[in-house]
Image 1 (cartoon, rainbow, N blue to C red):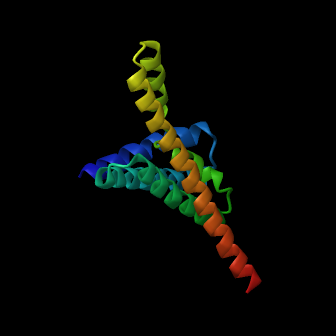
Image 2 (tube, helix red, strand yellow):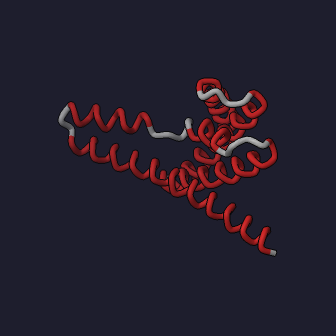
Length: 145
């Protein structure tokens, strides 16, 4: 039940960003479902491994693959599916708390929060780059065969 609740919250949260970014109407539901899937993978991996980097890496990798396949199927740019899907995982609260602790001169907590935020953000970037690389390799083999 916990993961279903997380999935629904992330899906509806991404819907607001999909409308804000003016996603095409036929892609909104798909991009929101991808956000829910990616967030659920993030939470599941985080609970099982207690590692933010792995959680972000796996979820961004799956989101990138889903976004690329949906882009080809629905004939839209992949960013239409990836950007709203990333929004639940972006570590905005981590940046806020890092600055909050820094302003309140609690350097130890500021450093911990900033490091955790950096790991989440970098894992999302690495996961997306890895998925795009896999897609590029698949396309290369497909068209060169």
